[in-house]
Length: 468
Image 1 (cartoon, rainbow, N blue to C red):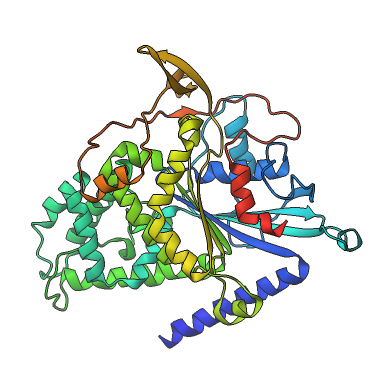
Image 2 (spheres, rainbow, N blue to C red):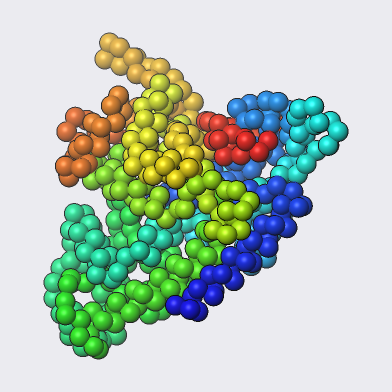
C-alpha cells in the first residue's frame, strides 16, 4: 500500500510538471475519445482533425464563426511513449479513390493539433494570437469499463458477471462448462486456460450481439498480454476458496489484472484527461433489442463512475489532480436516419445517460448529449409508399450498390424503449428497428473543407469552444 501511494504521488507530480510547463507555453486541452461497440472512434478523431485543419464545414464552432482561429497545424504528440494516431492513413481510407472504413481502435494513441487563436476584446489586438494545444487521446471503450473493476472484489465482479451471462444468449456455452467446475478443487493450469478461453469467446460473442458491458476489456484486446496469468481467469460462483484452489488463484489473478493492467492505464493516461467524448452506437443497440438497450443504459452509468468529474482550478489540480470538466455522450451514425428523427435519437441518448449526467452535474462537470455523424455517408430523400410517403436515406453498400433505407420510426418518448429493456423483453413489442451498413461515398472535397458530417461542429464547440 505504501509503494502504491508513493507511485501515485510520483505519477501525479510528473503529470503536474507537464501541465505546469504547458500552462506557461500555451493553453492545453487533453481530450479523451472512447466509445463502445463499433461506435466510430477512429472516424470521429480523423474527421474532427480534418475539419479543424480545413474549417469550411464548421460554422457552429466558436472561433470559426468569429474568425478567432487563424491557423491550425499538427505537431508531434507530447508523450514520447505513445504511438501517434495515424491521421493521414485514416483520412485517405475515408476520402481516397476507393473509400472504406479505417481500422478500428485496438490500443491507445495520441495526436496533437495546435490552433493559433486571436483573443477578442479590447486587448485582443495588443496581445496578439495565442496557441491552444489540443491533445487527443484515443483508447478502446473496453478499457474505460475496466476502471469500474477497481472498486469491486472478485466475488462482487463474479456475481455481476454471471448474472449478465445468464441473461444473454451467448453466455450458454460458458455457463454449461462452469457447471462442471468445482471452484474449491485444486488449481490446474489447463482447466483454468479452458475456462478463461470460453469466457473470452463469450465476451466476443456478446459484443458482436450488441451488448455494451463486456469486461474485462483486455480479454477482447489482449495484445502482448495474450496468454498471461493476468488474462487467464473467469468469474466463479461463491465458494469457500481454500488455499491452492481454483477460486483462490482466480481471485489472485483478478487482483493482478487490476494492479498491473487497469491502474497503470488510469494513472498514466486517464487521470490526466480534461474533457471526454463517449461515442455510442445507440442505433445498433436498438436494433439488437431491448436487453441490449438496457445493457447500454447500465454501461453508461458505470462509465461515469470511472470519471472524476468536476471543475479544474489551478490549485485544485496541484493538490487533487485533474478532473474531467466536460463529458459529451454522442449517439453516432445519425446519417443512417432522416433528419426528422434526429431529435428523437438525441432524446433517447439523453435518457440512456440520465443517471450518469445527474452525477456529473452534481460534481460540477458539464455534460451534453447529441446525435451526430462524424462522416456523412448518406443523402436524404422522400419516396412514395402505400399511398403516402417515407423519409429515407440513400447510401452506398459494401458491395458497391446504392440503396434507399428506412430504419423504422423511433418512438417520441424514449421511455417506450427503456422500459421494455428494464423488463427484460426478448424483442420489441411495438415494432422493429433495422440498421444498414453504409460505407463512405468518396468524392473530391472542396478547398478549405473537411469531410462532410452532421453536428461535428456543435460537438467541437461544446468541447473546446470556451477556450476559443
